[in-house]
Image (cartoon, rainbow, N blue to C red; front, side, top):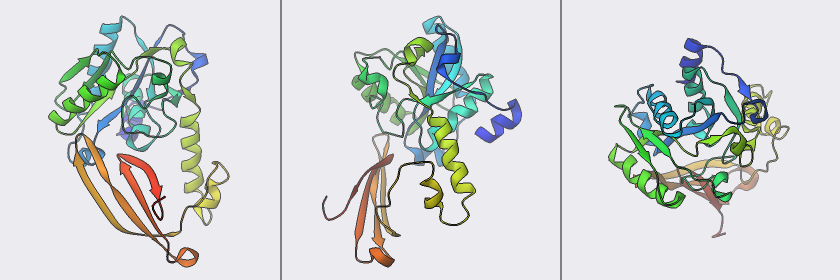
Length: 254
């Protein structure tokens, strides 16, 4: 989707919040729900238009930029497609620094910034907007709606003016993701060696995946993956628990 949008509309400028009109509207966006569902429940392509229209009308402001809600998985690239479609730049930053499974697990929540008014849309371009008591209630209500819509939907949460967004936004994460991709793509041998040049990292285990247990429930993909060590890690076993995203790695119960 992102490649097609860029081919159709042209490159998406990457901008810093400090270079935008402080009173302009920024729309952090992404897919919400179970990523596995999206394999068969393909987006319409126009969801971002109806979402943007609904929020601009509700807030009385015009969007000046799109932003990745989280810098991980599909939500690291979907906003690129939506920015290209809207003819808007993409903010070099996001609200998580990685990917987390729930609405309130974003940096604006730590600053008491509401995630609402927010809007979600499905592939039929049905739009639902929310104003809730708090961000935790929004998570509950949105998750139930997403399940009703088939397990996933497009969304925009935490709409903010540029001035407000400057405080909670984790800067430079889009550039960091690009650097990671470039390091892997151009790695002459071991990609981990190349990654170590652009990211602080450490290897937990070298091995192979021997089992994956995955289930879709409550608007999430939950499960675990088991990795058995090889070579110098022979005899070690690592379990990775995930809820849409990898949450924790467990070895020997720790």
